Structure formats: C-alpha cells, structure tokens
View 1 (tube, rainbow, N blue to C red):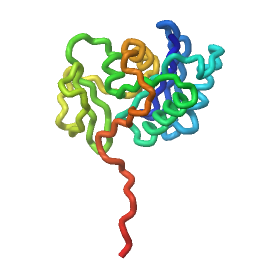
View 2: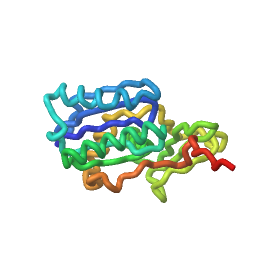
View 3: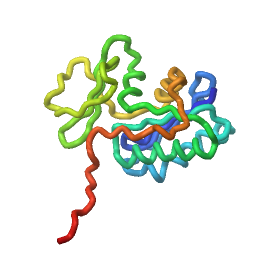
View 4: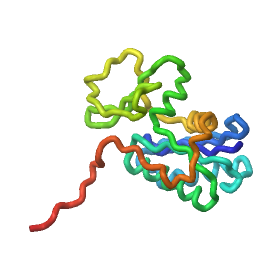
Length: 190
C-alpha cells in the first residue's frame, strides 16, 4: 500500500510517503505562512524521489485541523483536488489525534496545542466525545500533558495505514475549526 501523507495545519508543511508499512520518503519545510507556495513542491519531490505519480497512490492522508485557518484549508483542498482527479481515497485526522498516535501510549493521555491569544486546544485520548475543546492556557495542569509543536507526516501516514477503514472519497471531509476565524466580513454601510 502506498500512502502520501501531509500536514499544513501547523506552521509549515510536512510530507511523507509510506510504502508497504515503511516510510520511504519524508520531507518538511517550516516556513510559516508559506504552505500554498511549498506544499505541492514538497509532494512532487516526495513522489518523484520514489518514481511515483499521484495515480499510483492507494491513499492520501491529511490533517484537518485544528491549526492555522489558511494552512488547514490549503492541505484539505490539495487532498481533495488530488482525490478528485485520481479517484484515490482520503484519510483525514486531527493534529491532536496524530500527536496522540505518535506518542504511542496505551494509557490515557492529554494532548494540547497552542491556539493563540492565551488559549489552547486540548483533547484526551482515548476520549469521551472525540472532539477537542478550547480552554485557557492557565487552566491546564502540566502533568502528563503532551504539547503539539509540529506534526510529522510520517506519524500521519502510519495512523492512516492503521485506520484504512476511515478513508473516503473526501467529499464529507471538513476542516476542524474550534473557534471562528480572526478575519471578519465588513459590516453594512449606513
């Protein structure tokens, strides 16, 4: 099985190719706010390094948030575009789920991620409702908490391989937004 995995939610891009259970190529480019300029180049380089094309893939794995509003949209639209053209199914996972999977712990763990403005995203794994919450950083107890600083596409690829039954055509995959965007439409003029 060939899985192309990528993350654009957290301050840059990370891409990995998993073939038959082994990571055969991993690339990252951490230039904040440059995901649109970087992602497709990274993906092409990863595929070219292994002599593959998008049509040779069995699965596309992508993070769907929480994270940068624009970065999240860029990753999801790239995954959906590739899937639309090739018919390759998509697997989507939250950045918090990927971090929990990468931690490889069997007991209950808490994953946090900076949400800006003194807030954090938090989710327990295994959790009760399967959805992250937004809370004040001051309300978080430091013991046993794992903070997400970056997402490694290698971990996303392995998570996708372990959960292939969650793959879909991508039409129903939506960004995971916990709070409204900072940008607002202008109000009506009087």
